[in-house]
Image (cartoon, rainbow, N blue to C red; front, side, top):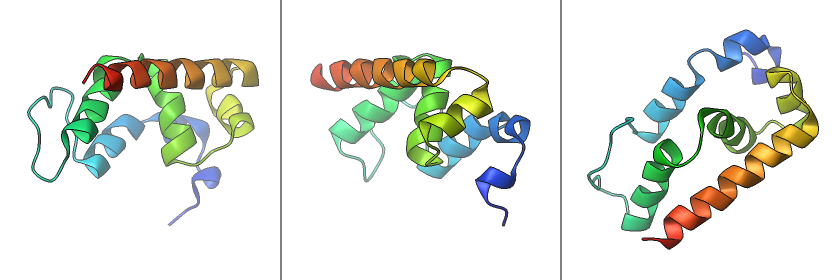
Length: 102
């Protein structure tokens, strides 16, 4: 298997959301608590697709799941490092607020 850093940026972005959903057992409209998930885990998974925007979600996936650093994410998405950090922090604040509501 190739290292994710060997894959061109366009290939990384293509299908990344679908892979993540499959890996985590998620679907876009998954609202019923699934067996084996706590209510808090289910709330977080719902919030990932309901609360944060697609650009924020992509940064979260690349940072926390793909384990890319801020500089690598900036290169892949062709945006500034400061924009990567802004999207990441905004998404985290939104997710925290969504979880606090449950």
